[in-house]
Length: 186
Image (cartoon, rainbow, N blue to C red; front, side):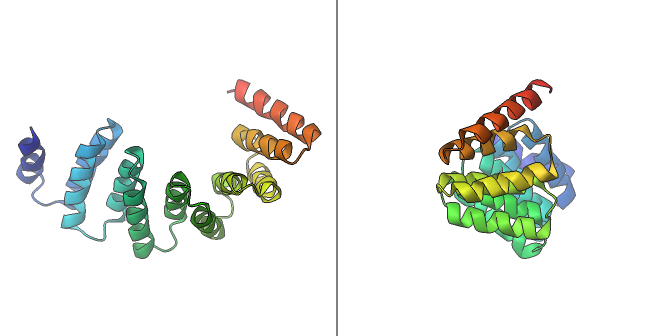
């Protein structure tokens, strides 16, 4: 079976980086991450500057909880395209997963610098601040996420937790109620 995984692309794609990438994406969509990684490797071997292959391989590694490898691939994406805000977010989330909060914060801040209208970046920044017990900074980050997307129930929930940690139970309850109402309306 393993033999077929490696022979199949050679028979049909004739070294096409996009062919390998499409096959890899198909495996990724089916949650067959190891097979996807094999095809992403072939796409990268065929074209070492194929950003999509690095991004998607990083996402495969992330799904497999191989965060160090995901960080390496997101870093390569950033080398190839330093203005890729999503790569900074992906690397930031990977750093967060290995509890390297300072690096995750740095990456979320860079993502925000590149795309200040993405509420997810601010929410993730708040999560890292929260885990560092910097609750005031977390509230500011969650508030910015809510300013951008007032329907982001997770930001309300997270801000409620930060308010609670600060002893601000009134604002905590208000945000909890708002999060519940937004979540139930989905």
